[in-house]
Length: 373
Image 1: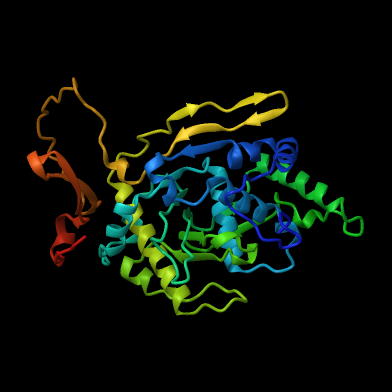
Image 2: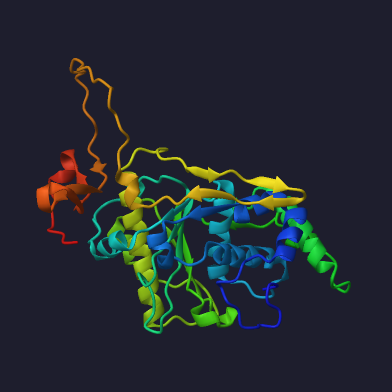
C-alpha cells in the first residue's frame, strides 16, 4: 500500500489525503478525486462520535485501488473489495448511515428464511452503509466501520468505468516512473481488469477500525460473495465456504461475516419498503474550485431509519376507480419498520418491525413467527 511505505504509526483523526497528496490526485485523476474526496457527508453533532472518519476510510479505499497494479498477491477477498469499489464508481457511490438504535434491532430480528433472494428489491446495485461504533466487532475493541453492499448481474464483468480507468492508469504510470526497472505493464491496466461471477451474486465487504493510531496492518478487511438468485435466504445462510485467501479465518472472523450477511439482508429489506428513487441527497455546500484547488462539497448525511419517513402528500387527492378485474400474482410483500406512537400523549415514536409476508398461494404453508426487537 503506497500511502505508508515505512509502516509508520498513523492517526486516522489526521486529515486524509494530505494537501500534497490531494493536489497530486486532483491533477492526475480529477474525476476520481470528485467521487472519492469531492463530497463529505455532515452528520449531526450528537452522532459524530458514532462513525469512523469518512476521509480516512475513503483514502484507504483509494490507496488500495491504485495499488492493484503493484500487488504481488491477490485473493478472493481483495477481488470482492475491488468489485464493490468499482460498483460504487458506476453508481456514484451512494452512501447511508445506520443509526445505533436501529442497527441493534436489525441484528436481533430474525430473517424470513423462506424468502427467495430474487424477491428482495434493491434501491441501488452498489452502495455503502457506515456502521455505528461497536455494532459489529471483536472483543479487542476493533469494530466494522462500514458495509459495502453490491449486486452482480449474472455473468457480469465488473470493472472500473472507462473515464476512471484512464485516470487510474495515468496514476499507475506516474507511480511506476519512480521505478525505471519496472515500466508500465499494459496487462495491469484498469481498463482490462474485471471481476466475473457466473451467477447473480451479492458482494459484501467492510473494514475494521484502526485502534489508537496503530499501523496499517491493523486494518483487517472482510468480504463475502454468494449467489443471490434462485435460493432462499436460509439456503444462502447455509453456504459457509470461505473465500480463498492466505489468511486463516477463526470463529471470531466467521461471526463477523455472519453478522455482515444478516445485517446486509435486513438493510435491503428495510430499504425495499420505501419507494425507489425517493430522498435525493441534500446539498449543503456545492463543490467549488479556488485557483487550482478543488474544495469538497458538503451533503447532509442520509440515515437508513429516516428512509421510512414518507413524503408529505398534503393537497393530493385520490379518486377511486372501478375494479379492473385483474389480480396480482402471488408474491412477497417487503418488510418494513413502522413508527408507532407511544409515550406521554402519544408524542413519541418507536420503531416497530413489520416483517415481510407472502400473498396468494405462497401464504398457504407460511407460519408467521413472533419477532422481538
